[in-house]
Image (cartoon, rainbow, N blue to C red; front, side, top):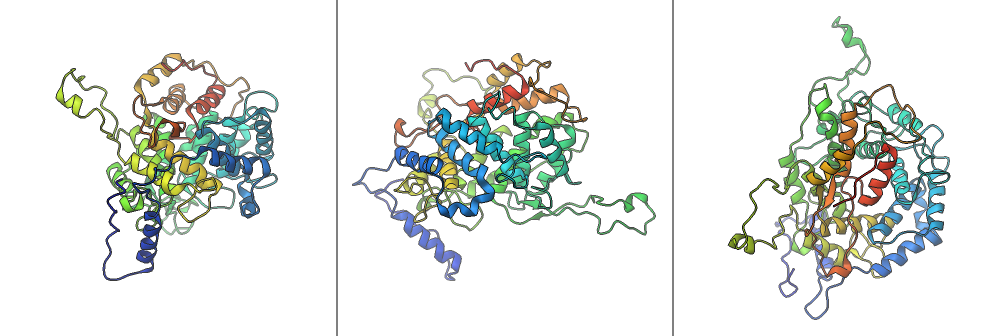
Length: 499
């Protein structure tokens, strides 16, 4: 971005609306955060963000967070994962206090609630398990062995619907965010089974909208009544799922799109061993929608979550992170079988510094650095808003995904495959379900989750190396180290060192 050339405002017509007015107001605010030639461009204020996080973790969250009482595991996860992205580890005392607080939210019938004594829910279950991946360990009071995986699996199955979707909690709604949280948790803890995911890929595919992004759910299209005059006994079955295509409920949304796409990638391991008709998604349409979500120059390259909406720092992760997931589907993946370029080839010399990413990584970093940081510490939606725990993590996660290119690695996959031992399971393993997972599928789940690697020489860091943050796993939003630690324990495997 050139400070000497003012960016042009978004085009408008002669009919102003509330939407166009607030867009113009937002552009005016963002324009004031573009550094001039006379001042240095702001870098990542690590120290002030650390102070913000420490205040929340040690002193407690401010009073305004009382509305987040049902999201206590999330507040902890957002905080400690932000520490990790900033390359800081918690001391043993704060780790143990976090473990105790998370375990206090575990429901006696399986899963985790939003706090002690609260009903189990898929979203805080994800946050709890991911938090334990960061601060936990095996053994007494370590958090990992205290997770009741059998009851958690039973809780998951109790939420499953006839169309392959899941309620987020008992007596609650269906939401693709809940499906993502369930699949991440089941993948990390080695409790995926064929019966758990039956029909789920088809449901996810049904949530893709005409724009290409994904909505929160789709119309289930159950039979209107359990009684029929047709004489066919099948028509008298309750909850009969009709074959009519299911329209999505709602519009394409960045958060739903990330969760649906990540869930789709997590289910790829089952495609070769499924008896059901394999569904598909329109990847080209999805890519176009994601690209269009990145703002123009006057919006500093931030991402919006929906068409015709304002840019927001949290979509740095929800939309920016989705591009890495597309690489798992082969979109934008580097060609590994091409003939190597010869030394002295003029094309090689000309294009060595080209960034062939599917989104503008440098511009996204500038949005976060220029507009996403609050002067007092923490990160935010956009100025002049205040920082909060949610936006602090997802702005930092977006910064990480823009700095580092993390994608599936064939070389790492081969290393994992060579070390796989089908006879090994978690030391404290027990029978989770009668539904048996074929070993080749279990191995593929393990490989697909852990074959991701940071591309050597693929980092782009605005402002210099001192503003570098840790890379995060595009599927889980955990560091690769923490993902490997938890999964090797629950799968009973040993990973070879990364070469």
